Length: 379
Image 1: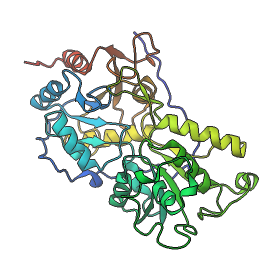
Image 2 (image 1 turned 180 degrees about the horizontal axis):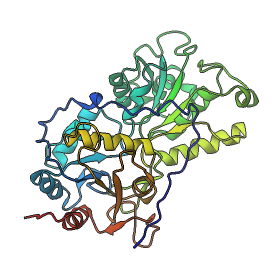
Image 3 (image 1 turned 90 degrees about the horizontal axis):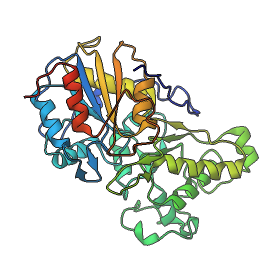
Image 4 (image 1 turned 90 degrees about the vertical axis):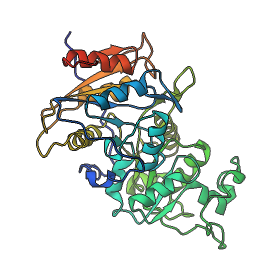
C-alpha cells in the first residue's frame, strides 16, 4: 500500500537559526547504569517512544521489557526517542533501566530538552518552566546555564504574583535569596523563557511568563503596553515538546505541554492581539530526527556516512508526533524512516493514523513484524 508522506507543521521561530545545529553526542556520554554491549552492524534499527509504547506511567507495557531483551540479544541497535523530560539524561536512563529491567546507555537516549544545551552561551539568566519541584533548574545548570530562575522563585518573592496558587508548595525548594531583599527578584533581567517539561501549576506559570513577555527587555517588575511589545518584540520563548496529548496509566490520553502552549497562546492573543512568537523542538521537528539518526549511527559503531544503516523503524503511539515526524523526515544520509503506530497509547482504533506505514497492537508485535520483514531469526 502506498503511503503519503506527511510534513511536520512549521512553527513560528523567534530566532529561526538558534537551534539548527545538531547537538554533539559528547553531551550524552555519561551513564549511571552499566552500559549494554554495543550492537553489531545491521542495516536497520529502531527508535522507540516511551510513554504509551514501553510504559504507562511507571508500569511497563506487557511485552516491552522482553522486546528490548530480544533486541539486545540479537545485537540490533535502538534508541529511546521521547518528548518527555524533566530530569537529567543520566537519571532518566537509570530509572528506565530499572523499570524496564534492562541496561540502557545514555548514548541511546534522546529526550525533548536535550538540544537546549546549544543555547547555554546565548542567555545569561533564564526562566525555566515545568517539571516537578526545581528538578528542571538543576537540569538547566547541568547543561551549563549559570543563572536559572523558576516561577516559584518569583512567587515566593512576591506572593501577590499568583494570588490563587499555594505558596507552601514552593517554600522548600525556591532560591534561598529569592525573598531576602526588599524587592526580591525585581530588577532581574530574564533573557529567555524555556519550557523544559509539562508545567504543574498552569495559572502561576502562565502569569509569570506573561509578566516576562510584557516587561521591558525581560526586566522583572517592569511593564510595557501590549502595542509596544508588538512593535519591539519580547524575550525568546522555547518549548521542548509540542504534544497536545500523552498516554499514562489512565484510560484516556492526558493534556501535555502542547496543551499548556495552547493555553498560553490563547491568553497572549487576548492580551496582545497577536500570535505568540516561540520556537518548539521535539517530535515531529525534523532536527530531532536528524539528531536521533546521528545518535543511532554512532551507537551502532558507524564512523561517518550511514555506518551501514539503511532503515529506522520509529515505533510510537502518537500520529501527530511519532508518525508525522518519521513520515516527514528526509534524511540527508538517505536513511529511510518507517513509522510504526501502536494501539497502547494516544492512538485509538478509529482515529486518524496519520498514514502510518504500519499499525500494530503493541511494541512486541511491532518488533516481531519488523524482524520477520528483515529476515531475522528471533529464536
